[in-house]
Image 1 (cartoon, rainbow, N blue to C red):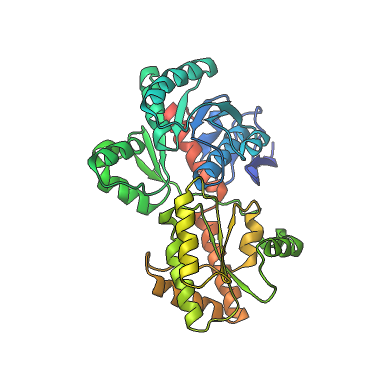
Image 2 (cartoon, rainbow, N blue to C red):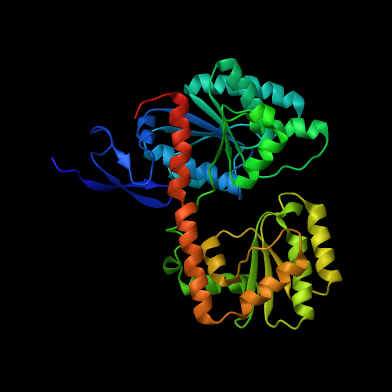
Length: 379
């Protein structure tokens, strides 16, 4: 009998699959490792403080959607957050849990709570995506004899021995996922003893269907620019990231001042992201904007729910050495000076690179393959 071609939803994608449908025998998802089909019926729990905006939070939801798509039960233990509705819409299950607490006494009690939850839900793997809940998850997983997965989502602050020890929990998984080669190098440098040879790089994936320029209408872009108070003639330089010091807001503000001083016209620098309670950092940024006389150029707009439109509204993205305002100013000035043909060609090359290395399908498939390997299930 000839194989059939059908579609399965994974995150926001419609992934092509060839062969029998689930329940009709083995199958292989296009672009996915074959072993992910063996996860049908598995119970995987991810734990994260909250499901608000951020790469770790978005990845949690996307992986849960992929698990649900292959017939696994996707559980997420978290306080809550704006992404809970999307998690549930993609087939994930929200388990309310005080995962955000860093209080040692609460964390000790949380180990027992998580053990009870895992027993109740027949959890087979625990995957931690943040340090405080990772210590809780490690304690529960070891006592229950469950595989423990961590994702090291970026560089963590702290140079003291105590802080390095606290951070090291993210390198103690039976599988340790690094979100970039930079992060993997950091793990090997700081936590080689804990991580051993268990580190695997899985890049954060992007839903390329949602971020397809054709799918983003002009009305959405115009509405967003108006909400940012950006005039039609202004060119947007966008920094989309939560308000925390290592995201580079101060570097961009200094670069914007240099560009203004060089006479680069029609600039609108947009800082889009949640402060997440960092009031002191908000005040610091506002003071720096005022001190550089950039009140009419740089604006903080808070959380942005429509990132595809935000990227369509932006005129520049560029790669430069970190912490170098002069290099950033020069690169952005060059980017804004490109002609239409050069800009289009650059955009096509950039999208091709992202499609090859940073697709949602690849990220979810690689993560599910890690789970399948830990369960030891044959494809």
